[in-house]
Amino acid sequence: MSEHADKVVLVTGAAGNLGAAVAQAFSAHGALLALVDLDESGLTRTQQTLSQDAVSATFATNLIEADSVSTTIDAIIERFGRIDVVANIAGGFTMGPLLHETSDRDWDFMFDLNARSVFNTCRASIPHLLKVGSGRIINIAARAALQGKAKMGPYCASKAAVITLTETIADEHRLDNINANCILPGTIDTPQNRADMPDADHSRWVSPAAIADVVLFLAADASRAISGAAIPVFGQS
Image 1 (spheres, rainbow, N blue to C red):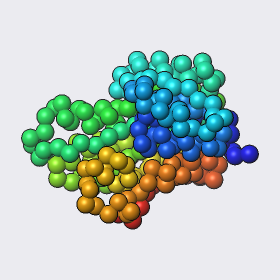
Image 2 (spheres, rainbow, N blue to C red; image 1 turned 90 degrees about the vertical axis):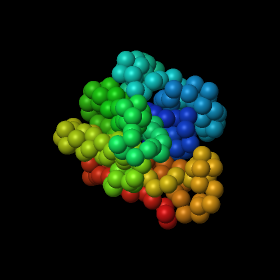
Image 3 (cartoon, one colour; image 1 turned 180 degrees about the horizontal axis):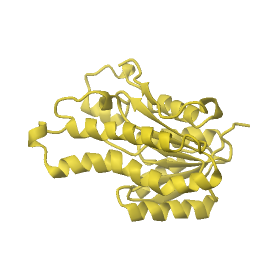
């Protein structure tokens, strides 16, 4: 039996390509899944791709609204009794104008989507991990967090914030048996990215399933000595 069997795993962004891959990976190992996203129909589609005997529940949630997240965490606890793993997969990317031409709206959109969603979910779920006496938090940053790029300022900065939030959580809870780490994907092989970059060598990109394997590892006992890490998962790109 997999060590992930019967773990309660919260997956944000579960309606997206990467979130669905993470949900599928945990499902194959017998985890109990709390699937969280704003896209209700997308959550249903993800749920339908899980292993036949999977135990899962969907929670339509606005991750940038603190009250919505808090309500969802309470509902997950009511449904499953606890949370063991928090996989913050939700996020996104938009190319922007030059930084001096960036609007408040565009800046806020990237920080809400990539950083506030992580902050809200961690803030609401960590008290429950403390009650259990253990937990794993896995966040998704990005390779772009490591160096600013032209016309990507809000995205790079928001993903850099995810690294800092992860390091902060790891330091604050290093004696609480709660590990926090983040993954830095390169370009992910998704239908959207293929459409946006049709001439790229897609075989060199990292697949959602490969990233999901790293999430599984970070949730496993084998990673017990790792906390506060930012792990590059670039594929061959």
